[in-house]
Structure formats: C-alpha cells, structure tokens
Image (cartoon, rainbow, N blue to C red; front, side):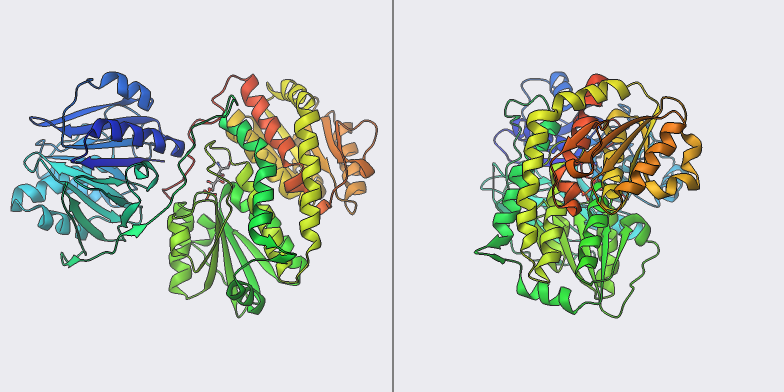
Length: 592
Ligand code: M6R
C-alpha cells in the first residue's frame, strides 16, 4: 500500500527518492508523486507508475530536501488531484501521508468554517490544511504538530516540510510505520527501512504518538506532550529486495518455482542434527497453553486453518480467526490461550490492531512472518521468520507454503515427531514433478476456463483448505469469480449454482474423504459441470485430469498448492492481465 520516502541533505535526493519509490512499489500503488524545495515548493505527481513520474519530473533538479509517495487509493479515487504530496490552501505545508484519518470529516468541516477550500477528496489534504491552520496561528512547528496530534484520530505516518524552513523534514506517527535512516551529512525517512538500506544500516523507529524532525545534521524526537526523548538507533541487516527476475517473465512464477528452496530453508533453519531448533521457552509456553488461537488475513489465514489441524493432531485445541473479525469480537477460549499470528509482510494493519488487544490482555503470542524487522516481528513476544526471501508478487505463493511448512514443524516439535520432516522432504518430489511435467497440462486447463464467469473448487479437510487458497489465488489475479466449497456442503445450497459447462475443480488426496468426494463429483457431473480432478495416484481414476505421486496427505498445501498457483498464473497470463500487480490489491495491507 502507500509508501513514503524523504531525504534531507542527501547528495542526490532525486536519485534516492526515485530509487526508494521503486523499492516500495512491491507494496502496490496507483499513483505517485514527489515534492522538493527550490525557490518555493515544487510538486510533481500523477496517476500511474514511478517510471511515468520520472518522465514528467525535470532532469536537473537541485534540492536539499525532497519527499516522495506512492498512493494506494482509500479516501478518494486514484486521480492526479488526490495523489500525494499535498499542498495546503495557503501553500505553506507540503505533506505525504500513509494511513487513514478517522475524523477527517469533522476536521474538514472545522476548516471549511474557517474558509479553507479543498482541491481533492483525501483525508491527507485535510491534515496538510490542519497543520497549516495552526502554523499560521502560532508560527511554531513543534506546537503545531502537538496541537494537530491532539485532534487527529486514526492511523498516520506523515512527513512534511514548510515553505519557510528549507532544511528540515518533520515527521509524526501513529499506528502506521515510519522509520528514520541515519547518515553522515544526510538523514532519511521512509515508511519501512527497505528503501534506505543502500545508504545506512542505522535506523530510528518512531513509536506511536511520537513526532520529530530531521535535518542533514540532526534528528530530534518528541513525545506527544512535546518532551524531547532520546531513542537509541537500531542496526538492521535487511535483505535487499531483489528486482532480479532471474530470467522469469514475472515474480509470481519465479516465486512459485522457489517453493522447494523455501521449504528446504525452513527445514535447515528449524531442524538440525535430528532435532527441532525452536526456542525452548516458546515450546514450553505452547505446551503449557490449553488453547491455540490462530489469527491472520487472506492467504495467511488459510495457512492458519491448516496449522490449526496440525496442533489438534498433537492434542492442542485450536480456533482460527480472520484478524478483522477477531479485532471487533475478541474471544479467548481456554484458561491459558496462546495466540499465533501469521503474516507474510508483518505489517498488516488488521493484525496489528489484534496485537494491541492481545497485549492489553497480556496474552502470550507468536508471529510467523517473512519480514524480519517488520512491526509484528518487532512487537510480538516470539517471532519465527520464514526465511523465504522477499515475495514481490501481490499473490502470495511461496510464503503460504512456507507458513504451512513451519506450522507443521512447530506443531510436531511439541511431540518431538520428526517424521513430519521426512514427509515434507518427500512432498517436494511432487512439487518438482509438477514443475517439470504438468505445466503444459495446467496451462491447457487455464485456456479452457479463462473465459468463464464463475467456477468452483471442491475438497474436504486439508483439500478444502487448499481449495480456499486456490480460489483466492484465481480470483485475485484472473478476476474470475470462484468459490471453494467443502464437498459435503454442496447439497446444502451451492449445488443450486451448478449448471451446464460450469468448471468444478476437485482435489482428492485424502484417503478418508476420497470416496465421498467421488460422490460429489457425480452430483455436479449429473448437473452438467465440467469437472477437473486432481488426485494422488492411489486414489486416482483413469478419467482424472492430473494425477500426482502419493505423499503424506496432510501436506496438500505444500505438495500440490503449486497446481493452483500455476493455474491462476496461466489464466491471468492468457487474459493479458498484470499478474504481479492485480487491480485494487496491495502487497502489504497497511490500512484497516
Ligand atoms: O502480509 P500478510 O500475510 O499479513 O497479508 C495478508 C493478506 O493480505 C494476503 O495474504 C493476501 O490475501 C494475498 N494477496 C494473497 O495472495
């Protein structure tokens, strides 16, 4: 979602800001802009890509301070006027903002009454004007920020400069990440550390309701009362986001094909010399808890569904919740619940909201994330990293498999069950087999379904969880409506939608449910559905579409999820869609 970069005193702010915006573009955006000071405030912005922005910005900018922003529209359509940076009514304040201001309508009304007018529809423009209003009143930026922060409700990471203090960037933050990068003769700011890692490995992270300023020589941070606070810089080694497609046409297919590496890396990180290598304190806390609560969103939630089953296998009761649901109706079954949150990005706002509740109730918690240094990694009690390498494509693939792999090992470690590791290794043979032999067949299925308006995935148990993920992936990037239905649930309603020619994709890999699934196939075939069956060898029938070698059935999400990923990929490709950056979606969902 939205990204912020800013530089003061940097040798070439333009170079840094543009490179930084490019490095943030994995978060997803629909418009981009920059602003700098050179005989007044200069702003360039437009709908479209950072490359397009670069084309409209003059070659020879000289500036001491510069801010940049990529916007993912929330308040107001993706138009040039709504694009950041925003300039206040009297052109005194120039600002970029990530987050959502809950009470912007009230603030706007207050400002309208004071004869302010607005060119766009964003909450961010309102904040630029609120800051200006108080700045004109007291001519003191620190007092202005304090006053504005006492009024603004919601999430914000804001960077701004004024028309009369030409060497300073001001920053303020609540519930949306903002990081300062420390340099020699320059200082930087960004919405996460990744755009700054070529320039520095020393960072100051602002906490909620802190604000401050950076010049090329100093950084000062204050609490909401305006008292200066000393913050120790932290050192971070952050993996540079690789923009190297390594010969692949898209990140999505590159990342699907990195699944075996990802699984192997998790095994070698968390299993050595025949033993699991998890923090003993974490294992003790998990063992002592009487209920595990999984909380996550989207694909990570689907991994949590599978993970819940793994813990149940080792006699732990478990519940699973979608973060945005749990946050508004938190329940804690059991006397000693333990919360496991799952997030590829570690920055998902819905989950950060949950963490606040979890901390308020002093509940033990763990985050499973791919992003070291992310908000959830830093703030949860325990953190297990997925070590999957950066996932660029909006559609999560290798991270999902990594989450399931790690959950399988973590649950098994409670009982020192090391067979899971062998099962995982064996499941990789299937992943390789799909990669090497089944892509043309999957592409053919993709061609057949690409013009359909709607389709269904069917499965039971672990195959149902996989169906949910397959369905999400297909709708995300191919824009085909699809639903995942547990086989047994068909007759309770969804079967009404089965008509001649509708594709139904069925997973049959679980010996316990295979014969019921065959019954479901008959039910939909009789009503004219075009059935594509994916089965393991020992459960297969001659008419099945794809038959893979047997594997430990509880690992469907590891062994055969790539079939679903390739299918979504080939359908999107056949429809000529933007595979890596589907419409309306962002990689990192930093607003609730
Ligand atoms: O970064 P997270 O794992 O917390 O993100 C959660 C979802 O937004 C994410 O999984 C989303 O559903 C993906 N685009 C799925 O491909």
